[in-house]
Amino acid sequence: MKFNLKEVFQPKFFGLFSNGHYNKQKFTSDLIAGVIVGIIALPLAIAFGIASGVTPQQGLITAIVAGFLISFLGGSNFLIGGPTGAFIVIVAGIVSQYGMQGLIIATIMAGVFLVAMGVCRMGVIFKFIPYPIVVGFTSGIALTIFSTQMKDFFGLPLDLEVPAGFIPQWGCYFQNLGSIDWIEFAMSMLCLVICFSWSKVTKKVPGSLIALVAGTAISLLLSRFAGVELATIGSKFPELADGLPMPKPVAPQFDFETVKGLVSPAFTIAILCAIESLLAAMVADGATGKQHHANTELIGQGIANIVTPLFGGIPATGALARTMASINNGGKSPVTGIVHAVVLLLIYLFLMPYAVYIPLSCLAAILVQVAYNMSEWKTFKYLLRGDKSDVAVLLITFFLTVIVDLTVAIEVGVLLAIVLFVRRVMETSQVNVLKEHYVAATEDPEKAAMENTDRLDIPDGVEVYEIDGPFFFGLASRFEELEKMKSNSAKVRIIRMRKVPFIDSTGINNLRNLYERTHKRGVTVILSGVTEKVRASLVKFGVDKEIGEENIFPHIVPALARANELVKN
Image 1: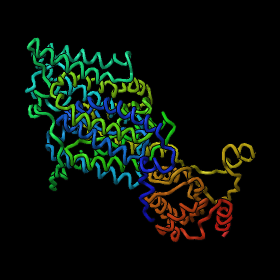
Image 2 (image 1 turned 90 degrees about the horizontal axis):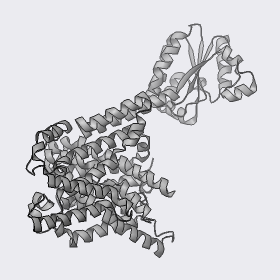
Image 3 (image 1 turned 60 degrees about the vertical axis):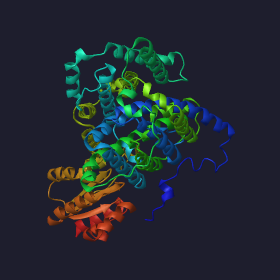
């Protein structure tokens, strides 16, 4: 099959001006929304950068470079990209173990994975990830972010080394209760109150920005008039005292051992990026009535994550909160995301020397709000009422994320998603034996129509198995169970496949094994209702020749005629 790039890569921005529908009015709406979203993204980019174990400069660079590329190359009209809270835990872990070079390599690898997913048309797969797994990830990440911010929230000493794990972290916090700085704590609480309550004043300007400005102003006043020095970005990153330096291209230094060790974290970044961006795009579609192109989005996200680390950035994805802010403020197209990146670039160039005065307690409060918004605690509580298997999946994913490791949680979560999918397919795929009394019960035409069955005349010595659903490995045990229940008097076994949409290689193997077991007992196997797609698979593996072309039929009637002929002979 010939590969066509245009089928999987159709950036929304590229087609924006071709149809003539984009006009000055829409540009004005995009411009206003882009400025507002850029202001909203500012404190988040700084906070996410610091919380991830890198500098505020790198958080902003990510919002600028990735934000531009995701809007320019993405498959959604509305998605706003940049650093998000979901990456804090995994990025901090990579930086602590492998350093910045390791993070650059892991992010580039994740970008390559994302591009490969898009090219292989895997965008639709992420729609089938069970909701309990997504909520388990999200809630677990939220609790982890909350935990990591307690040091700055309570004003514990800057030189205090806080362990990486959730339980060791809280052990460290309790051991250092006597070191709480109550002024820092008061600043955190004030900023937190502003973050949560500012929406009652206006929703046009985010509370996080007001908290950032107010916290910085109070910090400067306390320093000048009361001699109280709060922990700030400048005290944590003294090298930024002269302002943030201009970003310079970074050349990654690849070596085999590092790459091998980073495959799993890179895969985790790619999965997180895909899940978060496509979920945000789906929510945006629901709010606007538009449709995103999932494979294009994956490729755009991949390119953004390949390019951004070359400028010192960190992983990025679509951000739901910023996307909804864009829509609510009149954003119409990817131009909004591009404007938001330009606004952040202008802020970076002209206003960032003042960033060194931002209190860390203020940023901690902003991230606590982010964690609360991410937690989805109401949804979590609601899902606990559900099916036992869904509750188990939810709790396993949640506790693995919090207590063990996000990478492990992602891997186990993906495995659980596959197992649940197979289980549900198995529940919908059935093998039934059409018996004489079953046929007699459906002689009423109306009842036969309701049961979607035919009135069949099954000769003595003939068994009819009907498969309803995909024929794959999950049906093997069902066939064996039915065979044990049947007598050995049958001379012909008809396998009715009219409701089989596809058969995979495992199903082919199971069919071959079934044929061989049956053939050894002198029983002839006949296939009926074989669709063109299923027949093509049989021909590909040579099963049609083993069973015999004369024993494969598109309909049950000639198959029964053939069976009757074999029984009489």
